[in-house]
Image 1 (cartoon, rainbow, N blue to C red):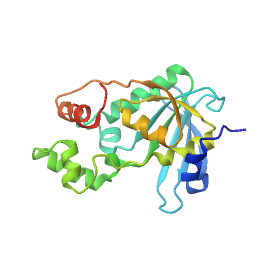
Image 2: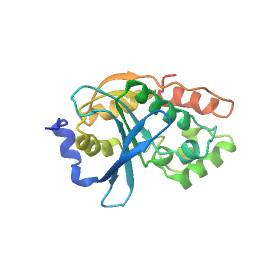
Image 3: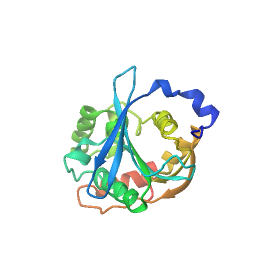
Image 4: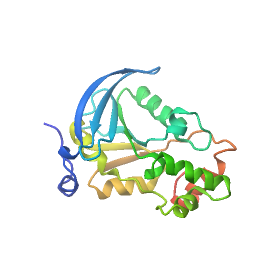
Length: 209
């Protein structure tokens, strides 16, 4: 039997609000993972979970909740630390032999790809990452972690050892009824292009580096 999440969280979003579609093997340089596809019925938006080993054993699972970043994850942008964090998290899971990464389609901290590019344009003109979002009429962080609940339920995961530098992410997950037993730092190399971005996240968003 799969472990259940807290009733308050389960009442907020049910598994039917994010449909499981299919799974397949996903060979990577570090291990062969399993790729699990989910779809939001209302929007058609697709999300995936990447797992390794037995994640439904009841033991806390080394996990990463990673929001989509096309520029960083696929286009090798140096403006952020997203791509290196994604790779580092997968490598850490491979070294552990067990874990899960949830890849949520929440580009640009939830504002979407085109708006993220608009925000980058404002940053090129002098705004920081928080100011740019706010100038576009958005919150500094628009992400919704409720999406994780049906994915975790489907995979039978009840407790996380979360790879993150963002304490607010842990708070948001715990408010949904999720159990985060440990924060695992995920530190990657800075560069001249993302130095201000990372400093702003530390000062204004409470990230720990």
